[in-house]
Length: 232
Image 1 (cartoon, rainbow, N blue to C red):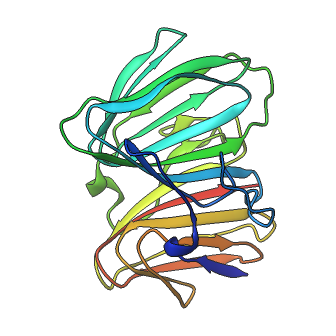
Image 2 (tube, one colour):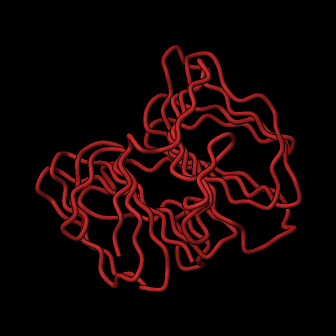
């Protein structure tokens, strides 16, 4: 089962400094039919204006992954962690027993990013944060694991969930294939470029929800940058 969810039909909120689109119910956007996809609870497509951002606020018992599409985001939290994550790179935060964090765009240009929340498998864990560069050349023509809760994915950022966040960059006409567990839930979005997923076309920033499939073939109809989450 593959369902394409057009970008134009997503939830939307424009706060001036933040222009956000919501793939699933979030904040003032509520759709009972879109409360998540398996363990994937949030996928926000955010544009944060220059020199602005999210002031300190709390989270607990959630795995929060940020994929920066353009610009950069600067993180600060109550554990003393600080870091700047640039375009194409990833940061993760395991909120655990509770953490306060701020995310600022300290750049002179807008920053765009995907923020993804996956429900934790380890409630009450110690809070943690990490970030890592993932050069797009290293994932040219194939999917690479960016964040994972599986021990065998040692090069990925760690999250406390039986899930993988993956990325691929494909040239126009290229394809990448994944073997899936049909019982799991996959959600993918092309940050740029139109794609074809098992024969179904999706435009840039459309959501593609997948389950009951044992193979996934993603073909780039334009040069494409793809982010995918495979969760229970």
